[in-house]
Length: 497
Image (cartoon, rainbow, N blue to C red):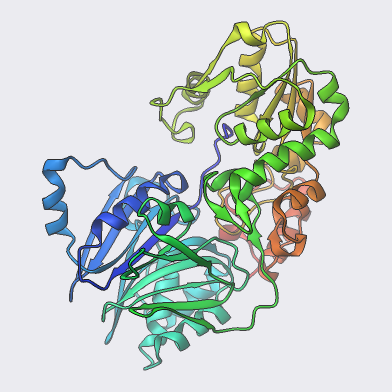
C-alpha cells in the first residue's frame, strides 16, 4: 500500500525447556514480522532476572562477530519481543523511546514484562483508576495502562488468571498480549473479540513453545503451528504444552478485516487458509463485480506487494494478461509519513519503478489493497499517466473506508479519510483515475471465508464491536457532518467516556 498508513504492532514469545538461549528465536520471530511495526523494537529475556533491550527503528541486522555479545546481553530460556507502531501517546522521539516494548511493571511483590498489539478505547477511565492508586502516574502509551492494571490486580494477591480476567472485563479495545512473570512463566491472552491475531506453535522436538502475532514468526524458526487463540482466551506454556483457559465466555469474534487486505504477510495463515489465497480470491470476485471495466482493459498491473496476489486472481478469472510492469526499488525504504509533504510524494514516486513501454497507450487495470487518505494514490496514478497509460482503472480489494479505527490502525479521524467524504466516482476524479472499483463488503467476506459477524469491519460499515467505540464514532460523525474540525485521534479527544 502506498497510502501512508501506519501499521500495527507484532509480538513474539518463546520458552525453551532444554534451558537454551531463546534470544535467536525471538530475534528471527521479530524479523519475520517487522512489516507490522517500524518505529521501535525490543526484547526481554529471563534467566532468574529480567534482561532488556530496546531501540528505535527496524530490528537490526546482526553481524556474526557480534552474536556472542547479544547472547551475553540477553541470556535466558524464556523471553518476549515486540515491534511497534504507535497509535496512542506521543510520536516525538522521547515518547517513542518511552513507549517501546516490552514494558516492565512492578508493584509490591508483583512484577512482570508484557508486550501487546492493539489499542485501548477506554483509556481515560483506566488512567483515572490507576491515578487513584498511583497519584504520580503519567500516561505514556496503552501498553503501560494495561500493564499497570494487570499488576494492580496481581498486587491484590490474585493469581495471574484472575488478574487477566479482570483486565478482560474492564478494558475495552483490542489487545493481543504476551508476557513474562517474575517466575519466568510465559503467558498470553486476547481481548473480548480477538481483534488482533495471535497464534501458538512448538518446535519439532516439543521442547520449545512459542506465541506469535503471525504464523510466519513460527515458520522462520522451524516451529509447527498449533492454534490461533480464541477471543478472551488465556494461555500459559509448560513442558507439556499450552494450558488453554477460556476466562470469559466468547459470544462473538471480530478479527480485523484489514489483516487480510494489507497487514498480514501473504504467507501467514489466517482463518482457514493462507492470506495469499484470500487475496487471490479478492481478485476473482473483483472480476465478477466489475466485468465491464475488465472488458475495457488491455492489461492488469499490480502495486506490489499486496496487489500481486490479487492480480493473479483477476488474471485467472478473466484471462487478461498480468504484466509485471510495476516493481519496487527494494532498498528505497524511507517511510513516507515521516517526511515533509514535498519529500513524501517524491519518495513514493521513487519507490515504484514503472516500465512505461509495457503500459504506454494501454488501458490498465491496477490492483491495490486499499485507499485511505488518497493523496499518495493520486501520486501513483499520476505516474502511470506520465508513463503513457491511456486509462487507469483501480481495483481495490478493501471496501471503501468510511470511518476511523479505534483498535490499532492509525486512521483515527473522519476528516483524513477520503471515503468518508466522497463517493467512488468523486474519489476517481480527485485522484485522477478513470474509475475506482471497490470490492463489495459481501465480496470481501466471501473471499475471506468467514462469516461477516466474525470480522471487524467497523471502518467500512460504521458498526463497531465495542460499545464505547460506537458512541465515540457516532458523536464525532455528527459533529464532523456539522462542520466540526477534528483536533486529534477521536479516542484521545472525545468527550464520551
